[in-house]
Image 1 (tube, rainbow, N blue to C red):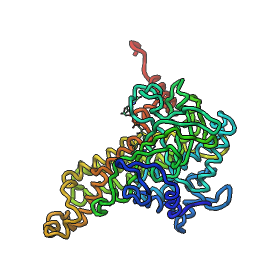
Image 2: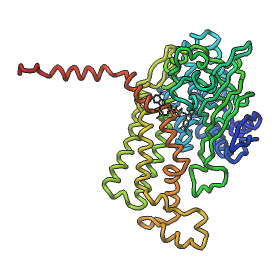
Image 3: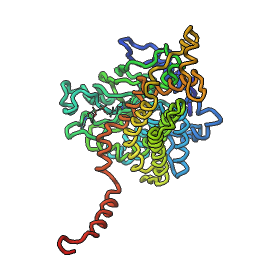
Image 4: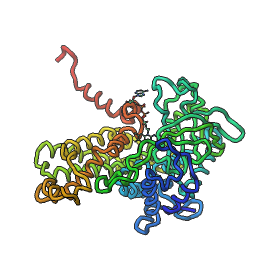
Length: 489
Ligand SMILES: Cc1cc2nc3c(=O)[nH]c(=O)nc-3n(C[C@H](O)[C@H](O)[C@H](O)COP(=O)(O)OP(=O)(O)OC[C@H]3O[C@@H](n4cnc5c(N)ncnc54)[C@H](O)[C@@H]3O)c2cc1C
């Protein structure tokens, strides 16, 4: 088939009803439900961009199977130019949501492409598992499917392993194997976009312990598979919000859901790995998934920081707070995070690594550094925006006030510096509030803290696995060699 249109994406959601729960009610049709209709429409717009003559050459490449245009995020790279094409494709989709859609379809597409790029990892399970990965990549590429992923065990008791929880299958695991496939039971978090995606892929982050065989698995299934349920968080926008009051949260909400598997059959051809703790722990690293997902997420993060930093600058300039030295210093600091992110992404591309089968991928260290940086840099950018916007963020009226008897007071008391009309200042501060105060903005911040896992262990891992440790240690040895012996000088 090749790249889908937005209409085809929405039609497939309608023809594949899934079990989604919101506020104690089962959602009949996610494409018309007020909590999911707008997020689904935005994803549909991304699919439509693939057909737009302005973007087509960047967002698509010829299918290795049919020659038809398919999404660039499925493309394996053979050169630096290919990596740059992937960068541009990530950037186009990211800029369409100002980077606020963390889990746009290109994110998990990239994960499956990375799996297929590392056949040796899955071959260790047996040849059919590698073939399953290849067939699955081809299937989602040719049908242009949207995947969510659920990697994390829900927080119940973090001091216990999955099998030590009050119920052996509270955390998702394999209950038994049958001739048809694995029977899977239990829960996983946090399926962002789950309600409006086509399929889910599950794998685990490293950290399984010996004996955790039942929890070691990698598979993908359609979200309308019997026994799969999703319980959604409270939405930020259920259709009643004004786009003047909430310009971002009325457009770019990403639904999040807990995923429950009620004795779900995962057919053998959808199993990529199972029952092998050592391999399940090694898979993420050995398949270089983080190189490729870090590339997508790094490009996206730049778009998100540009919006937040730009908003902080505009808010400061709207009331002339930008004349104060400490405000300039804060703005200079957060500009630095954008520039660091750009440098990490470019370095990762230029210093690409070559895989065993000759494809290339962005280098790991700069992208992992950027992942760790984002968990601190984005919350800091938001803190600066809150600090500069201060009480002004809280005194804004609503869209309805303009046409009310209080309208003339709004025009007078809400104007900004240098004759900035009230409506423009309010519009700007509303944008700032969506990013820095509203529940939508708080989720967007929490996302940057946690989307790549627990930042504490992630950054600690940078020390434990740092590839250039010896360069640092050699410098210390050279410096120590300069010091004389005690009592001999
Ligand atoms: C908005 C948002 C969207 C997300 N989307 C997705 C998604 O689409 N797919 C997906 O799979 N995941 C997603 N995630 C989930 C994300 O992967 C997890 O939140 C992340 O891995 C952290 O795990 P946790 O939330 O369970 O926190 P925990 O791991 O429970 O950590 C909570 C706190 O306890 C500490 N802690 C817990 N255990 C330990 C330990 N063993 N050692 C040291 N410290 C510990 C941590 O440092 C942290 O401070 C999303 C998260 C957010 C916030």
